[in-house]
Image (cartoon, rainbow, N blue to C red; front, top):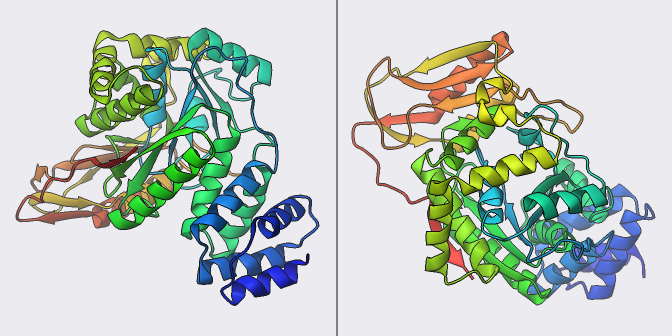
Length: 433
């Protein structure tokens, strides 16, 4: 078997078999195939595509390229959640403690964010002392005691995906259906949970620009999860506009705490409640409707907040930051972006809002960059809201005074104001079980 023959086969539209995909994955991970040859194969895949069997075989090859986590030391049912990424997506901070408070264990391994804001690990590290680098024993102990834990991704969890994604990122081969499916599901299947709920984003702030593309991706991932013997479901959710009011690490922690106290943005609450309900349903806690009721009641009663505090304590965080969010990192500059027109907010382009948060320091452009936990955006006016000239659309939070003008311009250009209110769009656009 030779890599050149495999490249030519795919270049000419052939179907790669299980042994060929395993060979490429194994040998590239081991350093025996150079980047330039795998780059050629990735481009051939993008141009010629892969069928369902090829996508599944590549997924399993990525899963098997490193450790497969054994979660049996954790008592009870373990259900994982994964989002395909979005602007202002702090759902894990809410959903994980919510389902933990109702008896489902969440043992989540999460990477650092690369892009407009930090990942879940970055958000939690806004909390003083919070440790995301846990040994296996510490991780299991935290989940058993608190019901949940979020740890940085293991160095040997799906190592093939780390190498392949880094190469895709610099060769224009990220946005391919089969490569996206195999990347996400390879990692999730290696993480060891009994079930997986996927939050598949649709819209300007997502790589799925249309509901059709999102549904195709979701169905493929659900089918692969079930084929691997995992209970799997997916929600299709709106990412044309940022999720909730906050974009940025400490700001999103604050908003999550607000929701855990029974308040918060209605779209964010709706999404988190539904994600939690589906996780509870996969964990056999009742019918879907019963699980929705359980999730709503747990938020109202404060049970989910108690679980969040328990996780913070179990991972070494300063719980006083949770009880008094003024102790979280705060920016030295807060700048209002004001409307220059009168009318209704027709669109708030999530991708452009994300770019603005990156300019302010909330994210990272390269893996070695550090995030400013205090930086970000608080959105005051959402799609459908009426505005007058001079009304504040958003507040920019930053320690980079020189970044304010550029970020403000991005927000204004991303916010479309029209004479008539737009049609309402639900945050949840579909469910695949």
